[in-house]
Length: 101
Image (cartoon, rainbow, N blue to C red; front, side):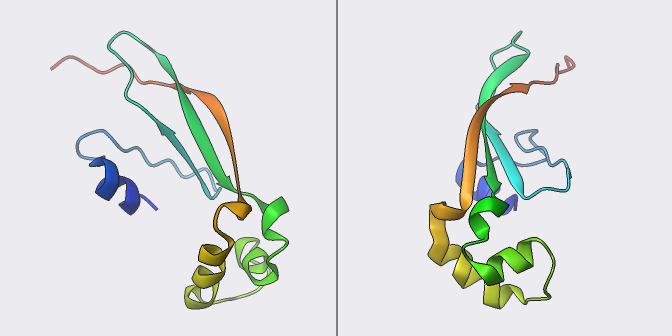
């Protein structure tokens, strides 16, 4: 999932603009860079919501891993559903303290 962020924002793991943490969920948290000395900043967390995917049976089965479906079958459903299958919330994002070079 990091490719869109690398393309649109120029955020990469190498430039510390992108951090990937596997929490076992289909979610992304997006935030601006914090000013120097700030240790927490507002961000938005976006999730593929199983309460909403249930209205799209094949997508729901793929998401919950209850049915083996090829991505080629699921992606068009996901694109057609658009924003209807996502939930989001604002949250505080802890910003790591950078070591001085």
